[in-house]
Length: 177
Image (tube, rainbow, N blue to C red; front, side, top):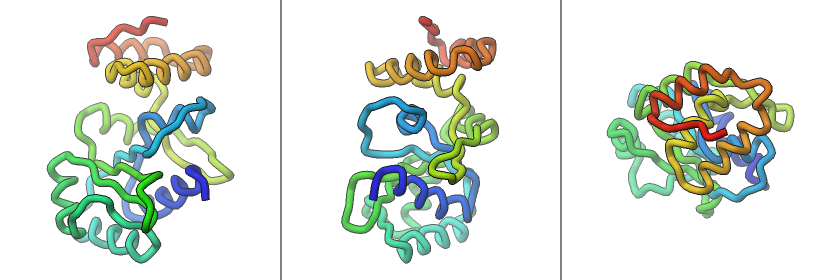
């Protein structure tokens, strides 16, 4: 099974319990950039402990495992402490889903303003492109800047430039294109 199938399986599990948005590198891959990645980053709306433990138990029953050496309660504590947890298919490390609660207002905005995207006739939610571009510039690695440029070039006719510049200003970065 491919990376996209893994993502769709993770989405189907997570969306039973909470809202989510996919952020970071997988967004650019989904939209056509040819580059590798080992994980897909999910920001999920915070859950109560019992709801998360149900999600965790269902994940384990459904052929997933968590790469963190914690039980479901310990994984929940990690999320509460703004750390990410990693979920993969049993017996595999790659690909994996890095799952986290919102760590800042940008993650909260990505959740609230997510965009619907279609993958293999299934719907998934990704971060708004203006936020994605600005955040990638903020991260600043070569790969992140290349991701930002790819998204900008692909969608420049449809981007809200004022919104993009607003995110960039809040993140204290310049949009060089």
